[in-house]
Amino acid sequence: MANSSDAARSLLLDAFERRYRYERDFLGFSAQCRFATFGRRDVDATVALAGPGEVEAVVECDVSPAVHAWLLQELRALSRSLWSHDFELGEGKYGMTLDETPHPLGPLVLLHDDPHEASFRVRKRRITLATRRQQALVEIVRFDRWYVRPDGRWLPAQFTAEVWDGTAAGPLRTDRYWDRYWPVDGGLYPQVRRVESTDERGTTTANSLTLRAWQPATFVR
Image (cartoon, rainbow, N blue to C red; front, side, top):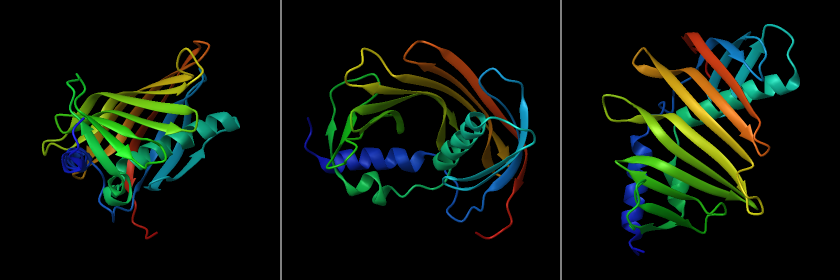
């Protein structure tokens, strides 16, 4: 275990800064959305993303609360991954150390005094694995493929999120994501998200959403 907190901080900060994110003053956008959940027919909606966690969805027909909740959940997740992130107020406020033991996913950055006991593996200036603990549950996210812009900034294109319980023999839930983005006016807007979810009984469901006809917002929040 290396005791150099400076090396750990430099490695993690560089990976966070290389991730593509919108500028802080970006107002967001609206779009037409078509989504399908839990094996049901396609449903159309008008959606808007205005900031991290700030989303709206007007669905064109009656859907169950679970279907509407899934759409809002994924829109919020996309918004939080795309808007700017303050490293100094987040991961950067904790002490950290670097474990450089050879590993295919890169060296391990361990955060200290973090209530979620977060850790990150970094390889080629990208985060390849992230873990966080919430009481007895552990979330593990492995990033397998990336969308890389010409300037080197990246976004996850394929990743897997698992939730484990210390008393379980396997993950309680596994979500496999495939994301695609589309260039609009020099920026990247989410175009497709496909999710395959498997519960602890082995039941798998496939859900997806597609965005088009993006319109940059002109309002002031």
